[in-house]
Length: 80
Length: 296
Ligand SMILES: Cc1ncc(C[n+]2csc(CCOP(=O)(O)OP(=O)(O)O)c2C)c(N)n1
Ligand code: SF4
Ligand code: SF4
Ligand code: SF4
Ligand SMILES: [Mg+2]
Image 1 (cartoon, rainbow over the protein chains, first blue to last red):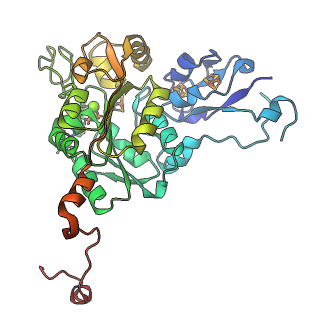
Image 2: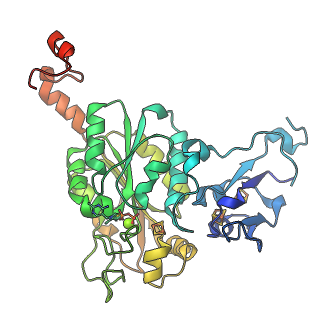
Image 3: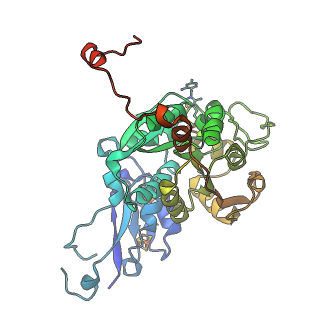
């Protein structure tokens, strides 16, 4: 069970790759798909490793991605 | 990915004017990254956001005030500090932040920066240094480092560049720091600290401009610049600001260089003026009824 995950607003992404480069768990990759503006937004390649640290969100200059942690009890399988 | 049954929300969104996003900034422009650190620093404090104002001059960096969901003012080029000074003096309970570019704050507005630091006026000044006048097409600024290419220096710049931390330190600012847009967490902590301090707090942030500075100097894209900042930065808290000059390809000295106590402008003014000074001068009945002061 991963500790967290990310939310991506693909249409805001401008494909700079900051989130991919600076994710400490190397869990992101720019996808081959295009958004409406022609950029390649990121997607998760190893969701199980994501810690929800939100470094991707801190780096994203376009507010297109952010990380969040699952509530502690969720990780134990007792969703609030 | 499993479905979520709790609210997933990016707190930075609360501080953005949603109707203005997406921004006009180019892909990989570092200005937006600095906004994340700023938003988190603001949210992490017990600061009344309804009494927080942000003022910018003109430029790509100057767009920040327009994207923040705070009381914002987009002034004329180079005049963010004078406007913010008036705002703070007229309404001292406000927390006033100036957020602008290197050209705006240190080239056309350089004189205002010097005097704001000399007066130690209670403002937090954030300078996004992309080493160029970006918005107008990449002309050389006072911050363009030696021999760099720009629209106005086709054979390479030859003017020596300004060392901002040294300038504001010498003029008397009580807090001086520098980070790059790579240092997102350090920048957030420094901004949080500066928000709480009284006097002129100055934070320089080196930031990539892939469209002009990086491209004209064959320095690769924005990501290359960010990785380069990571490699070249040396953290030296408290170091003398004459050691912080930026050389192309050399070390980038980052950290909190100056953190001292010095009486701020308003405190000094109140002390000096004593009973001659009152924050909201009482109006005579005549003035109130006429809607004008007796001098008019
Ligand atoms: C009085 C005046 N002079 C010149 C300009 C043109 N101008 C607009 S933005 C700008 C440069 C801004 O550079 P900087 O502050 O470094 O911001 P950046 O775009 O690099 O973020 C200039 C010269 C102007 N708007 N007003
Ligand atoms: S939240 Fe942290 S671990 Fe998860 S993708 Fe973002 S940077 Fe990587
Ligand atoms: S940092 Fe933001 S804009 Fe850049 S690739 Fe990632 S999601 Fe897209
Ligand atoms: S021109 Fe440069 S500073 Fe302006 S938005 Fe584009 S990358 Fe950013
Ligand atoms: Mg600039």
